[in-house]
Length: 331
Image: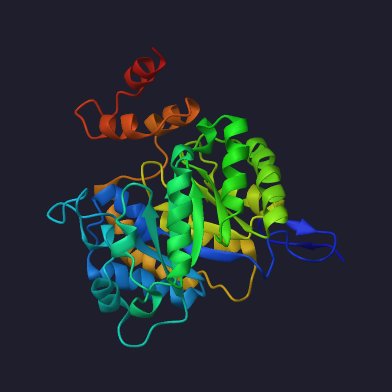
C-alpha cells in the first residue's frame, strides 16, 4: 500500500521517504545563531532551547564554540563563544537531560589542547571540529586529541563549494582515516543546488563506505534551499543532520529544525516543544537580529561568496537599496 504524507512525500514500500531510525538530529541554534549576536544569549534562552530540544527528542544540542579567549575577547563575546564547563553546567543543572551536548572547535581558533578538558571533567559529549581544506592537517590533530580525551568527534569540512575537486578528494581521504565518527558536507555560502548536493553526497558516501563513517549535512539558506538540500542529502544517505530553531543562524540562516523534524516522520521526535520555544524565545529576536532569506544574501549565494558583504550592507545606511548592492557585487 502506498502511503502519502500531508506534504506529499511517500514511498511505494509504505514507509515515509524521510524515515530512517539511524538518522541523528543536531540542533545548532545557539552556536550558529551566536554569529548574529556575538554569542550573547541569556541563560534563559539557552536553557529554553536545551529543554525544548530535550522534550522534542533531539539527539544533540550544540551549546556554542570552544573559541580561544586570545582571539575573541570575553568583553565583547558572550559565554557561548567559549563554552566553559561551569557555564554549561549552569544551564543543564544537576540532572542532565537525555540529550547529548556538542560544541564546535574551529581550526586555528581553539586552544584545544588546554581548553578541551578530559571527558570525565566535562558535560560535553561531542566535539565538532570545523576546518577549511588547507587546515586539514591541524583538524586531524584536533580530532585525535578529542577522541583520546574520551569524546565523540565529527568534522565539518567548510566552504566545499570553493574547493577544487582533486583537493576535496584528497581532503576527504585524510579525514576518512581519522577516528571522527562523521564527516559533514557544509554549504557554507548557501550556494549549492540540489543536483550539486547529490553529486557531492555520492563522493562523500564513497568515503563513508570505505572508512566506516557517517555523513552529515549542514546547509545555509541564501537561495532558500537549506531544507531542500538537507532532504536531498538525507535521501542520498546522510545520517547526521543539522537544523536551528526558526532557521536562526548567520545571515540567511539554516535549515529550520522544526521543518526537518516534521519531515523525518520519526515518532521519537516531537515538533510541538520546538514551536513553543520558537514562539516564546526565538521569533522575538528576529526584528533585532534580522536573520533569514534576504536579497543581498541571495546575491552572495548566486556568486558563491561569503555573506559578510551582505551582512555589512544590511548593517549600513544603504540597507534596502537592493539593486545598488547587486550592481556593486557584479562589478
